[in-house]
Length: 204
Image (cartoon, rainbow, N blue to C red; front, side, top):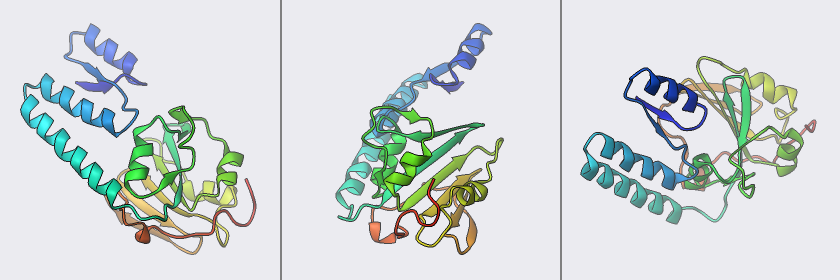
């Protein structure tokens, strides 16, 4: 059983105490932590060679994405709902790296923390061009309502890309489009990022 050493650590300990083969992987603080975990999993299942090859291939892909980024880097706000507990992402998260690899700039990337409590005034002041939301299928969150309550759905507001349960919603205050997309979203070609003029209408 593979779990994480974050919120799943108590569960991992209970599983181990019950005699189950449980292993708690560190929560990655960057893309490099993801590669480390791939190697660790390979070692656990006696597949160290293929796991190192996979990690090396991914690392090379990361380098290509970073090298292909355009000069214009849209400012991106990320909001994660872990059950009923919302967080945003600082610079000590692998999600920060995913935003960078996709060609964006994490608006809270200079913060040294990992997962931060929500600070809506600070989010509004950062004037992101893109807002990304995530919620777990077991605890769906009405992101459309959140966007409207915060006044982020007016003209000039950020384009919101909403992930939950494997489905992606795109919301730009004019229409909402539901598209099933289980791949990692984003591209290093920033010309394909949705453009917006920052927060408009009411402020947070």
